[in-house]
Structures are given as structure tokens and as C-alpha cells.
Image (tube, rainbow, N blue to C red; front, side, top):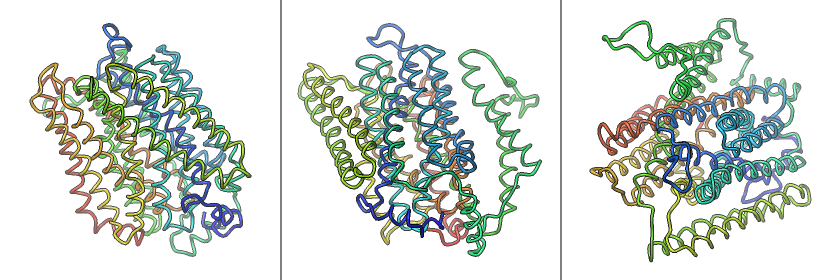
Length: 595
């Protein structure tokens, strides 16, 4: 809150710096890093594990169809981004951000442990715990950053980009090491490793409590009242906007329909149990509308009515800025619908259609490159840990010691993996290895984009979205080109997938971390955690669409070809990028000076 910007706690907080930012940002950096290590380590395994053949392979999976695996993954990913709405509300009203992060991390640790058991019941139970824990963790760790940087808007874009680098450092090592253990040793090893680092990440954040003072603490009613008065005097007041009975009915109806649709999709495909009617009771052009899709559309319409009703009751400046957030959220749906193919269809493509067997000089070159890809980023992140250690060890020794143990474990696993691969006669690149490219490219390019956003050449929000969507579409265009004309059993060069991940990553850096920053700038402080949750709703819709469409890769390839499948994800994002660029003048007016 802005009132915090003048307190001794926050001023002292900003005196202890690492790489030009408060040391506390890097505590959050490492907390998110270990959470993302666990999340992405499991995420990269799920579809591969579910669809891997039961027999005829050294490391069998469950032999599910791509459609069923995509339905389960899409629902899981969608729910992951819906529970933050509830978690944000609970933190805003009761627990505060720091306690919410601790609660969420503890629940996720139990979820990873459950998944390591590899039974169907433990899988569903573990996924449920991960969904619940993420609801507490995800919106509130970003809200701590928002509170930390109140009154310093010029530093926010850079802070969120650095934080996003921590996200991807965790994703990089999680996908590499959990994926390697799972594919080379056994699935439970990969799932189990994810849980271990989730537990250690929770401990290091808890032990760093003295560094934060009151930032992220239990809500202070007197401070909230003071902050509300300041907002009223500035002309951007967020006056109380209580939910009416009509609002509550719409919330219950839209949430109920949306949740039922998400659960019904995998349940109907995997267990043949339908919670919704198979068809709607009316036709469109003699073609019956799918019951589940029709109910989801009804739920979405009810939600839009709710949003319009509530936004209309705010003051003009707040109302306009919230409309801008909603417009950006719509384009975020289109982005993640395509981008999250990296967790579904691109996993299957890498496993079944990419040449991953290397021998001789090719194997040696790959092992050298892989060693550099692994050791150099790990050395850089370890150096950041050393800088944090120097600044904060006297105040939070326990947290630093836990981080030291984490990094010793990572270094040990990396060295063991590299020695094992250099000693092998033949190198088979793991499916999960391609997924780490996204995180590696972010680690490489994050600082460049951070400096770009802080320079005089910083483009408008609409053009950042435009660049992100077009680059994403071009990446899929490369895959469509590279896979054109291939027949059953044929393999394509890995270069196509590597270049696609490069373009996808550059697009992500233009759009994804900046989305969080713009929400924090455009939304009044009293509703920041809730609006972060609303932002994740857009990502949830994109993830569910990604899972459902990704599960169609086998069907579309059989009916048309693989190139056609990738062309869908080429055209939609590029069209979205052009449209958001055309909306730039309107968005500038709605943002009322926020850049």
C-alpha cells in the first residue's frame, strides 16, 4: 500500500539491495523458483506418463489416449488458475499474503507426495491438493511484490521480470531433473523429487520472515482505512462495492456451471460419467449443440453480465482501467490457448515425431551443449544466492542455509546426470529436455527485456501484446512448415522444435510477466489480490482450451495432417496480435496515463 512506502520498515527493506532491487525480492525469487521446480517438474511428466504405452517400452505409463490425457490435464491446469480467486480473497480479508503462501506451499507438498505413489486414486488426490495449494500460493506471492513496490511504479516492470526469471529458473531445473529421473529411472522418482524441493522451498520462505517486517502480513484495518482515504483524495478511489443479491446469484450460477464443465470433461471421457446433458434441448441448423459446451457458454455469458454489472458501479477512472484489464485478459486467453500446447501436444510431438537418438559426434556435441545449458544457468543462479547470502545471512541465517542445501542437491543431481550421459554409448534425448528450452531462453533474454521496458523505447502495453502473440504464432508456423509432408513413422529434425520454443519464449517475455505488472498498476490496492485471481481466470480458460485442443492432435493428424494441426495455432495468435495493435488508441485512453 502507498502508506507503507513511507514507513521505516519499507525504507529499511529497500536499503538492502541485490542487483539494484530489495533483497526480499530475491527471497520471493527463490521461493517461487522451488515452487515452480516442483510444479513444472510434475507438469512435464503428466501427459507423457498418462499416454506412454503400457507394454513395449522400458518405462511404461498408463497407455491413455491423447484426448483423455488432454482432458484431464486441461481441467487440472484450468482449476490451477481458478482457485487463486478464492485464495486471493482469503488473504485479502483474513490471513495476509505471507501466511497464504505458507499454507499453499504445505498443501502442495502433500500433493506431490501423493502423486509419487502412482496409483489412480493417489494421482487424482494429489492433483486436487496441488490445485487447492496453488490457490493460496499463486496470487499472494505476486501480491507481496505489489505491496513491496507501492510508490515505486518505475521499478515494477523490472521487478516482475526478475521475479519471472526466478519462475523459469525453477521450471528449467524442475523439468530437466524431474524429467530425467522419471524417464531414465522411474516415474515415481520424478514425482517424488518435485515434492522434496517444494518442502524445502516452503521452509526457506518461512525462515525469511524477519526480513519482511509488516509487508504481506495480516490485514491492518486502520491502515486500509487510511489508504482508502488517500485514494479518495487522489480521484481514483475504490469505494466499497458490496455484492448485491443479483451479483451473488450470478457468481453461484456461473461458478457452478464452469466448475461442473471442468470436472465433467475428463469424467465423461475417462469414466463415461456425464454430469451435464450430452446435447442441448435445442438445435442450431439441425446440428445439436454439445450439452457441456452449451452449458459452459451459458456460464460464460452469466459471468460477463456479472462483470459488466459490477464495473458499471465504479468511478470513471477505476471503471476504465478495469475495462482495460478485461480487454488484456481476453487476449491472454488466446495466448495461453496456443502457448500451453507445450504441456500437451508438443510433448507428444517431441516423443513420437522428433528424432531424439544421437550417436558418435552428434551425441558428443549434444552432451557438451547440454552441459553448458545446465551448468551456466545454475552457476548464475548460485551467484545470485551468494549475493543474497552476503546481504541477509545475519538476519535470516536459517533461510540461507536451507537454500544452500537446495543448491547442493541440485549441483549433485546435475553432475550425476552429466557423468551418466557422457559415459553412455548412445544418447537418447528425453522428451522433457525440449520443454526446458522455454525456461533457458527466458533466463538468457529476461534481463534484455527488463532493460527494454525501463528504457525510453518502452512500447505501449498493446504493442507488447501484439509482439507476444505474433511471435507465438510464428513459432507454430515453423512447426507447420517443418512437419509438412511427413508420413507415419517419419521423424523431423529437432531444430524445428528448438526454433519454435525460441519464438514462443520471446513472445512470452513480451506478454506474460507484463500482464501481472499491468494488473498491479491498473487495479486499486484494496482489490489487488482478487484481481490477480481474476487475471488467472483468463489463463485458466486458455489452459483448458489448450488441453482440449492439444488432445485433438491424433484426430486432426489422422484426418488431415500434422501441419494442419499446427496451422491452427499459427493463424489464431497472429490474428489476435494484429487486432490488439489496432486497439492501441482505445486502450491508452482507458488506462488514463498508466504506462
